[in-house]
Image 1: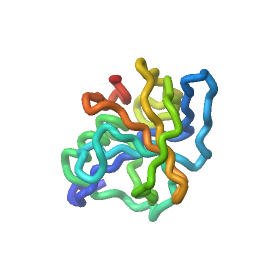
Image 2: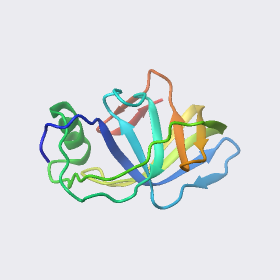
Image 3: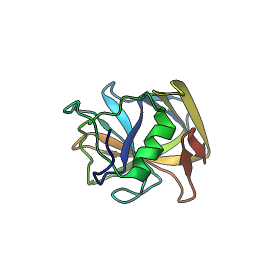
Image 4: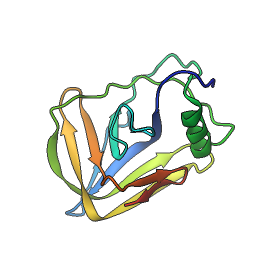
Length: 151
């Protein structure tokens, strides 16, 4: 991976599901991933988009050094960081309810299945075309190499 293209988008996980406020678990389609703009340049920093990964060139990515450093901290030096194509919806976004937790699988040095609870619950939105979800966390959210930290 080289360090010179302007993108701050990183896929943080896959196999995504949400625990709704009523206790039911909703599973996203298996091709969906969690997309995060670690810079906040193109997308709100505390919004997480759950979108369909559509493959890609499989080529090494080129990113700014600060994003490269963030990706390496999240995935580890031996991570295979590759280009993946995703469709980021512009809306309209419809509020579908509150969720008490997100569950997902993570790759890299902290690979495994994770659950992050939200107390109080956070709002989940859906876009129909293309089919996608947006998890809107408070502006004070903290997400780092450990994953979702707070809320």
